[in-house]
Image: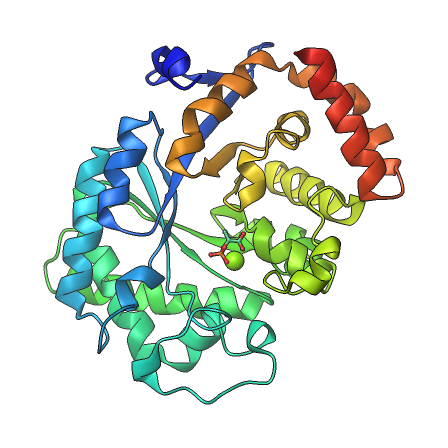
Length: 324
Ligand code: PEP
Ligand code: MG
């Protein structure tokens, strides 16, 4: 199947009715950037930098980080690269930091909360990123933002480090500053974020877990982990509509972006960017190219009025079936 689709590697991602979309890749290290390019990714939609910090005995230095970010930007050769600042905590631990055990790690000191608490770590990462920005098209985003003050604090730190580096004579590129939408409070307040934030990437893996209050790793509650629950779909639609009103783009970098059943719905909602594993890039592009946004748009209101995930899932399956 993949071999038959190989011709799509360097094609654009345009729907059947002429709407533009973008398919980009998720990576965790420098080598995976090459997989994304090989598979026709139009950029990197999520570089999970945690992996530069894991499986070692101490924090990576600014220079080590700089080399990694520079290598990814160079591999992408001018295509956009969205780097997420350290999202440690939750299920991802750094033993060498000797953090205290938490009762509810997923509700605790993770993502931007950790970075605003341990500012020297975030500042070092931002410096490494800003220095690397001269080597490609860099965008930076913060994970796990719950309230606007967190974004503002992160942005202030970014501006400070950028200005210091410019004074030091470092060449700095144009850097977009965005955030993940993966906490319901953020999705519900998206209008105010959209005025200040350059771009959004919806982390559906966490958004589902926090909206339905179901630990994404706990099998006993996995029945509540429902990507097609109307609560999730309405949040996604709200984010897209509010961001577009302010002229800002929205991506999804959670697993839902590569979910075959969900893709028609996301196309209909006008999601700008699908960030998926490199092995799903071509498939996702092929799928989008067969869909008509206008046709799906007509069904959206009815779909989102259904009461539960089962009925929405059934309707979507039927739609996919009819299409094939
Ligand atoms: C997400 O939450 O959907 C996401 C992409 O981030 P992570 O899976 O790294 O938490
Ligand atoms: Mg997440």
